[in-house]
Image 1 (cartoon, rainbow, N blue to C red):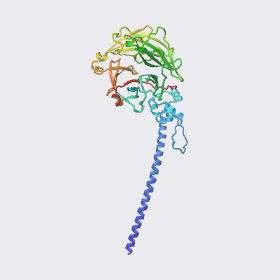
Image 2: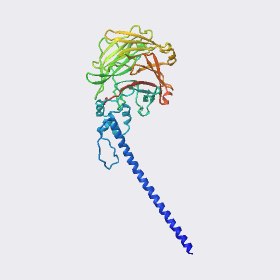
Image 3: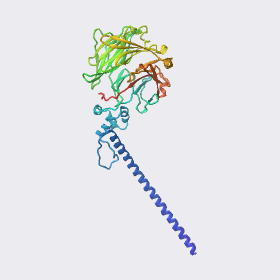
Image 4: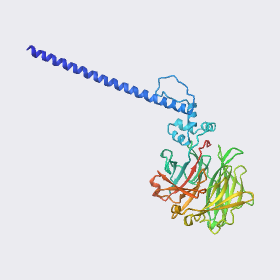
Length: 452
């Protein structure tokens, strides 16, 4: 009997001990969870503070110590410090940081921030390729592409924008210009600002058998009044460029800006721009234009005086090629304007370069190039079109039509050699439709505030 009672007491004591252990374990688990949660919160705050400290030290910025306060956001950055940090970042990061919050988006798009960028030396950025895509319904997309180390340009998904972009892409000083639904649009990829200009109400009217179109919008800079301007040319013509009429309009990018008609001199001959323009200094625009089916010229427009000058192309240029078949582009060669003609590149591998040595005397020099036989396979059976030049003067070619395995070619005129760069990351749907595309290489960021 005594032994049974002893066994019962021992069992009850063991059960109490296990129950006490269980309560202690639960208490330890709960305490550990609270400690871990507190540790994680402190760690997040510490990481944010540490990242801010490293960022400030890396950029050489003075950091102000702030007293701790009971708040969820212990790492709030003073606005003046935030501006100092953002101003030192490349343009592509500014576009990405607009997604952080509404406050950051408003700050980066503000006039004060754009003016602050002028006072700080910007880091030299790598060239950036922008590509506009438009389908038959007018739906558009602007792709941003960066070069990698394997001779490719890769689409940056974070910086690509659906609904942005249009026809006839060109730009100046980091600003981009394109046309969409008969309106000109200016876009700043650094700040994300977009300005859609009003429609032009032309004075000339097309007859029933004539075609009216806005051929080109060209951007330029007036150094006298410190203004960016846009030149738009409206063209009316019959078949084969007969009865050609033109009107030119200028828009100043400022608050309350409007279109102003530009009246050329009496001896000004109507022309139809057919390729994108080229500007060496930014204040004078140069572009190729046709007077008729077999006569073309370099047209120059001074954005300060708003006057046109025309220089007829050399007689020896292949005049047997009508306007509709001519392949030519205006490029910069050795700091001078030049006509790069490549109508027989695909069949013969030949190109001709006419350099305007002296505009006043109308003196030209001619250079001929023949592609190396080992590189003819890059241009044969492919319709190519020039899409500008690189910073070091290489001519950029692109296929005339979109297809899978899209690429660009860079033609080095100094070494007479072609380099191929693949384009990766283009959405597949653009290969399945018969759409429009245009692309331009941008070598600088814009710090210009667009007035609306």
